[in-house]
Image (cartoon, rainbow over all chains, first blue to last red; front, side, top):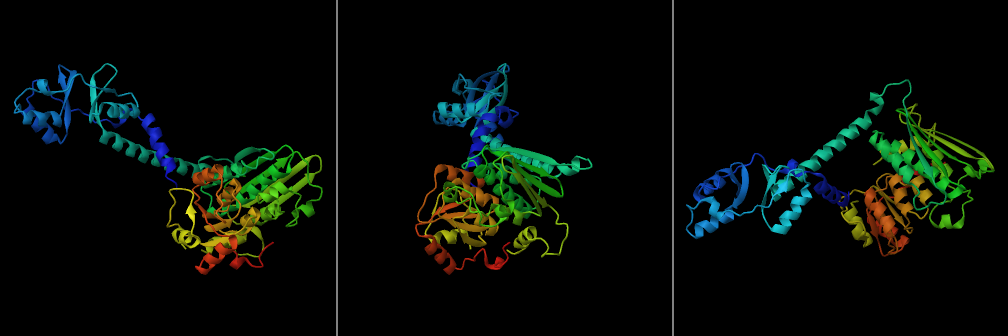
Length: 327
Length: 122
């Protein structure tokens, strides 16, 4: 898989995730009267590199390991934090999205930001590490959510009880839309994947639907409709249009017979193989047409082959099934 | 044969970044007729083609084709490349003709897609 979607998702998350989801709590704080030497112990024991300074519950500064080093250098290790801290403090709000913190880190070149609520009370601290951890966790959750939705889709036919449950997907297909051609079949294939259909069934339905979709694009005056009806044991694809209609269906079914214009042949289609391909992929196929009225093509693919073992009986499906075993 | 070895044999250039070079390819087919591809190509096949329109990628998607090699150094437009990236199908541009490329791959031991379907067509 390409790496592009992952990066995009992280970019999205930076905007979506509120700071409160990734910040560190509870906050370790010191008072302005804490000495730098006491601060050294607090940083060491908690293995952190800075703390906010609170005076009677109010945020008045921030003091870091860098301030501590400077104090050591100047022999000021017993000075109160008040004299060594940075103030005023740059803060972020808990409800803001992570991107706001990223901007402030870049703008002020600080390593740590105190997080405040809407009333200005200190509720957490935030470092670059917190953001990285939070993003990784959120991606993990996303992955988990995707798994759950896959699981649900897979069990939809067990969850919903009726005498005959089916899912109907309906797509409008535009005539001559060669570039967009196949997008409906692509969505049908994806739906089958999510519903847990076996790969060879997905492939047979996708090829048949795609040929039918291309026929609507190439041969109709005003496009048509592609409908997929998905049931646990059977998938039915119906392609309908309002013209021009097929004068001789028997002739149209012959491999190699084509009425497609040259431009479409140059694009690799219209060689008269579409209908025979559809037949090959399907367990049953019905083509009805009336010139000047329209055409209706119905394709049936069974999910569980009804007769197992009789390879010769049907041309289409069995062959595909055997291919699958081959590699 | 692994995609990595195929790229070397055809002296190809990968047009879609982030490709899994260890992808195992089962067999290969060369065609400019997409209906032929839909009829005869097998899952996890390599497709060699002189066509560069988006339908080549669509065809590959429907038929579970693993990767596409464009012959004679043809490079598809951004639409085709974008669709291939979206569908996770590697695209490769190779500088030689269809005949030469098929010959090179055959010589390197690549299997043909149509070997065991001879005489089976409907």
